[in-house]
Length: 533
Image (cartoon, rainbow, N blue to C red; front, side, top):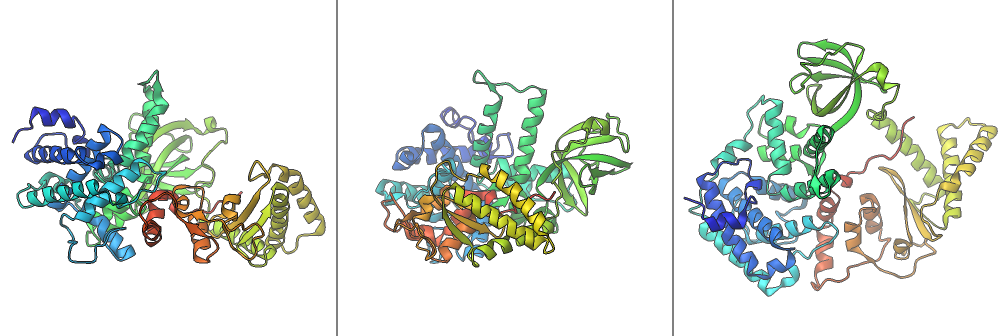
């Protein structure tokens, strides 16, 4: 089978970015031909009106074709998502009915096509909540039916992608390079994550443009390489807020001997470490500030031509906790001597005790609840009132931390807080606000647009307004804990605006946690906002 000149011209390089291979195969030829049929349906329908030009039409055509290939080839990229979604929320997909006889696991489904179009559109514009039924547009529905019929007609005769099947397998004991290759594909090339990766790196590359031309010198190349490695290990997939290693582990399945290892690969950290001991298979290194000692494997380092001296050489490098107390270098590395560091280490809190953070947070929470009569939310107006609240909070906190603190010490603490509190201005103008204590992170402050929608008996500023629930999803400044707290305790009036679909409010509330994960990704998981001195 040969690729026609027209097919090649229309798609250009778009199809290849969804594949881990660049060589042309019969499967690729088949998929490109099918992809052009998909593209034709998209272009001739109102689906195109929901997109933003030719590039997006081609990208969506590639994603839908890659989905078809994934189902045919049983590579489980999409079915892993539906399986996990069903485990978490009781059904295979958000938004759509998948409980009847019209939905089949591991086969082509009409609902899957609707979802993938919603997914692609929403990833492209992460500030907008799209109607997953696309306003029940007749032309849109007709086009989705045509796409489904096209895939259904091809289902029995389509070739399986055996190379992709083989690529996604993992042999026990695979080396670091092999594992990272799989994770790199999931994070940057797979059809479920390619668009996220593309958007991320388009923004990154802007930093290296001069006169609209990308210029990468040696230092920029290292920085860009580091961005790529950081994306592989630290970025979260919009679907269910999973990192690439977590998603790949689920593709392999719990029965796979390397499941736990892949799932537990850590995020990448960056810090400064002194080499304490050079061994045959690695290095004993010590974090400069915390003095925490780690074993760095030689398996994926490139120090062979560099002179390393015990108790003298300092490595500023990215690390990933691999397994069995072994760490791997992932990303760039800068070599210093201990004298060059001059005691400076921007990673000083890298290994801060998480239990200690939680202990500090617990004492601050106790102080907060003691001055609010056990309420997790306090209401006030203006910066002066907030500053007074802040002083009372931290004076109470001082008493809880040290019950033996003297009046003289408290007076001194009060003097310092009073002198410094003038800089505490949550908002530029004096307005109504609510101060919420997040048990997972600490103090949060929200402005009048929210406060006026909260019919809390303790809220003197309630004005019978409604808050648009879509803002809770698309505005990232709201914490997940605050959102859930006010909703679960009926402390806010919610509505939804500007949607023709009368069921949109129900759709959002029925799929709220999925949407929170989708729009927040890494920030879905709140971390303590305290510093250990």
